[in-house]
Image (cartoon, rainbow, N blue to C red; front, side):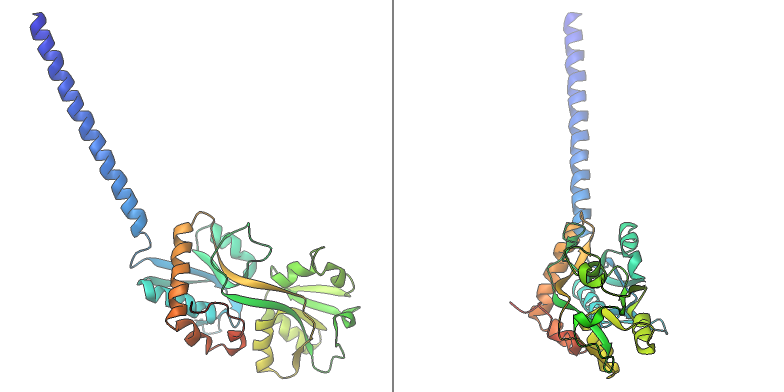
Length: 279
């Protein structure tokens, strides 16, 4: 009887071991499948959702006909072409950028987006362009220096580097305190219209955006003095390291094969500021 029990116990033990081994094997396959899925997530056919300011020429915009364009838009589309991704435009008002990114509506913020002062807020791509904040005025305004802005109405777009600079104690707040007012606009297009109409006396603005405006209207000029300088990059959610790495690799490839320079030919106002060059 004892012998029979021993045989039965051995049989049960073997069956249990085989079942446990099979279960472990299944888990391993599942882990491998999950790893493969993660690796393939950004493979061919991935829908890349490009988040950008809907009114920030020459980097990104959506015109009255709903057409999109701009240097950053064309660059994002070139990345998609390189990888075989589908491109999806996600234009938004600039002050909604964080809500759009955090909600997953877009994969990144790529739209003349300043790294400086935001280093810890996003996962950043490599910088691809330098930029400078300037003061733009009407040619006959009589304003020739930053000191001349005392008692003047100055406009700026909300949630921009120029806005931050003029509100930062370590930036240009001391200068801003001399203004009659600092008027905040939703877009620079509206602000430039107000400048030309005399509703404000000057605009604090990125030099490349200013150059785009000055190319279209020779009554606009920038002061020689700068407010500050910065670098542009692409902002991702902090855990999207794989996507960020792929975009960086694409930027290097597009610089090396001449695509960046070719796209930049369409935007001469930013060409001299690009730091993305073939190695």
